[in-house]
Picture 1 (cartoon, rainbow, N blue to C red):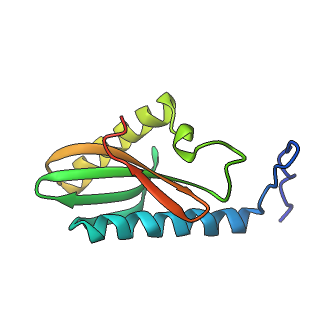
Picture 2: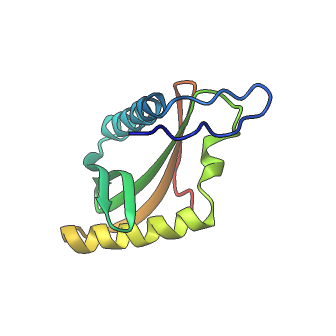
Length: 129
């Protein structure tokens, strides 16, 4: 299978190969899921997919359903990870949450969080949008 050409990079910007990016993303999702578990949430799903896209983490506690988008970076070269969750991504996550609730029958108040992981450090922005 042919490899995709590397994305252009600027001075000081190293681009990780696809498998390394997946490992960074998966490690960030592990941190986020562990963060919710440590706070008494039940992690209901990770990488839940349908034709609309994917939800990284779904967690619930006491009638609250949290849909969490995880953004991971190895450095600050590309900015704060949470900045990557703009209006289009927010709309997609709202549609995905509605689909998840419809397909699973889960009920509750929905909150949208963004977990930002940079160089292995986790920050969870609760009720980010």
